[in-house]
Structures are given as structure tokens and as C-alpha cells.
Length: 297
Length: 239
Image (tube, rainbow over all chains, first blue to last red):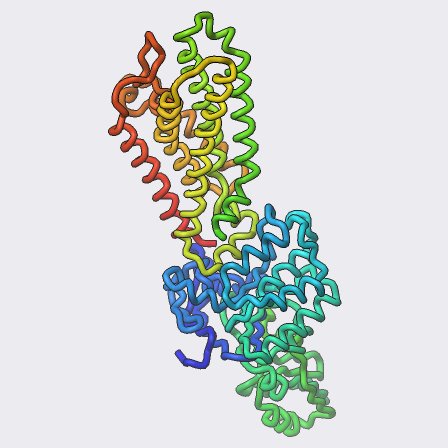
């Protein structure tokens, strides 16, 4: 396990009976920057995060968060003092008011920043005297974000942080994540909002059916992932394009579409040999990469 | 601040139960004594005995409700993720919840007894504080096992209504079994213990004799075992 990683797992597995929610996950989240954790519903993202935070015990494998083994978190709660976590469901204590919730949360963290909390209270327009049970989903999300952003942790873990937010708050969230990352906070964010993630993330991990299927920097993805559309006089055989790096080959009549992680030159060479009538190479966005990666095989 | 949280979580339940119990007992002492007490001297103690029996029933119902809540309930409501991400061990989380519940249970015995004492005094029926304290101590010492049972049930069962239903079911069932089966009665009839029947002088209705240390220790041990089991269950639960 490397020292540069804030989160590192080795063959981390969680099974519920015969169902494997997370399968032999080897994940490495580098220190600094924003790492996006993507996957379909039920891919195992929240289970992974809960294992990292000690809420769920792994079935096998191991993991380290900020230098502490995840199985030992119960005895090393100090590690959690260095982590801020925004949970998926945004649930807080219904019987507390906003003010009581803030007072309660800040008492646990020496890194609490009063000025940031005050600023976010103003930006989010949170009513201090309102009971949490009477807040809307969006307001609760804002309060949960305030509780995380008012701190200055080493690692910020967010599980679907934008749920229920209006576009203004959403934009503010993205800007805050970028700012916090620039301040040196490592951010690990799970989301379905791929367009937004593409704007802010430095690294991308994609989980599919519990297994890590993609782990790369966004720059690498942009540089190497290509979609190649080709037209031939007659339909080519699929085998012609089976070269390392090719993710998917789709042939319909005399047209072929290939998604590739690398080796674009080799494919173009083959297209030339097969006398392609037209060849078009396009860089593809994260959304398309994600959809290709998690497509049913 | 965990104490603050535990207080906020239980205070409406606690204050409602406290006010309800106290009001019922004041009403009983103030109005019902003419029905129960035809004679002046001895009957104050008889009244205390009956008042205590009302209190025992109400108190057990109340502490079972106070034992509800905690991390499993929070899991159902979704807030357990926030709680468990706090830099606090599960042992401490549950420990504070239990300690707050015990403190409130003691208050639910002490304050109504204070109200009985005061109301009785205002009705010119004086009795020594030691008698009230004796009843209150027996009530708490015997009854904490019901609080322990409730905490254990609420750490096993998530449902908002299922958990209290099961806890009340077990409470009633154990009361029937231990109170009616002849071989159990001398050792396991907690209701007799809490009601002071084992220490009661039937002719004077005074609690007399030495304090039942052995029974108290046995009862508190059972309560501690139930609470310990609840802690172990919570530490092993997945959230």
C-alpha cells in the first residue's frame, strides 16, 4: 500500500449471503484532488464508503483510510476526526433544530471554522430555529453540506451530495468542492451527476456490480478514449478489430463503431487495410465512457 | 454533547411520562384517599402502599418506552450514518444513551414520590421520607431490568412500533409467568419486589425489616447483563 493514497483497499469484499455487493476491490484514492466514484444504482459505492468508515464490516480483504486500517476504526476514532462525511440520505436528528444540530456537530471537531459556518448559513438561508423534521429535502442537504464544509478535514467523503439541491446551490457545491480541493483537502465523491463530475474531478473510478472496472485520471480518459466510426464497402468482421484496448465493437451493415481506451493508431491502420470509405475519430466525454464501461456485456 | 443529544432525543417522551405519572398520583393521593382510607392513622401507609402499586405499573410502562430509540432506530430513520461518522466509539454512544435512560428512570421514580410526599403533607397526612425512599429504591432496583430489556429489544428490532410491542409483550409475559408459577415466585417475582410486598408489615402497612441487598444485587445484575448484551449487539450490527 502506498503512502500517497488517502484511501487504499486490497481485495476488499462484502457479501450478503451469495450476493457480492463489493468484489475484491483494489482502490487507491490519491491524496489531494477530487476523485469521482461512479457506478449504477446498487453497484456497491455506498457499501464501499460504509466499509471505509467502519459502519459495515468487510467479508474479506482490507482497506486503509488515512493510515488507519478500517477494521480498527472502532479503536481509532481519531481517524474519523480527520474525515468529513456527507451521507447519501442526508438524514439528521429530526428532533433537533438547525442551531442545535450545528452546536452538536461542532463540539466533536477541533477543525470547525466558525466563519465558514456563518457564511454558509447565510448563503444557504438556513433558519436556525427550525426543527430538522420540518426542513425540505433541499434544506436538509444544505445543512448536511454545511456541517461538512465548516470543517477543515484531510479527507472529504461525499455520497450523492447534490440530491435535492436547486441549481444555484448545486453550482455553489461544485465551486466549494473545487475550492476545498485547491486548499489541499482530498475529496472522494460518489455521484450520478456525470456532467458535473466531469467539470471538477481529477480522477475517476467506476464500479460495476461490485467490481472496479475503470480507474484513471480524467486527463488520461480524455487523452486516450476514442470513438471511431467507420464506413466500409462491405461489412467487416468483428475479429478484424480485436486488438488490445478496444472496449466494444459494434457492426451494423457496412458501418462499424469502435470504443477504445488506447491503440487508436492500430485500429486506423486496420481500417486502412480494409479500405474504409470513411473514418471519423472522436474524443468522447465521461458520460459516454461511463455508459460504455457499465454496459451489460 | 452526546448527553445533550440523548436528552433532546428523549426529553419529550420523558417529560410527558413524568407529568402524566405525577398528575395521576397526585390525583390519587388527593382524591382517592377517602375511598381507600376509612381510618386516619394507619391508612396513610395503606394509601402509600396502593399509590406505590399504581406507580410500579406506570413506571414499568414508562421505562420500557424510555429504552426505545438509539442507533437501530436511527438506522431506520437514516441518521445512523451521521452518528457513526462521529469520532466516538459505539460503546460510548450506547453508554450515554443508557446512562441518560437510567437517570430519567430514577427521576421517574423520585419525582412522583416527591409529589406524593408533598400532596400527602398538604392533605395533613404526614409520613416519614424514609418510607417513600424505601419504596422508590425498591422500584428502581427491581425495575431497571425492564429498562435493560427494553434497550436490548430496541437494539435488535428496528420497527418504531414493533420494538415497543415486543418489549411490552415480554414484560407482561414474564410478569405472568414469574408471578403465577409457584416455584418462580420467591426468586423471580419482580413485581412483588418493586411493590415492597416482601418488606411489608401487613398489619401496619409499613415497610420494615432489613434492606433486601441480595435481591437488589441480583436484580441489578440482570439489568446490567441485559444492557451489556445490548451493547454487544450494537457493536456487532452493520449500518
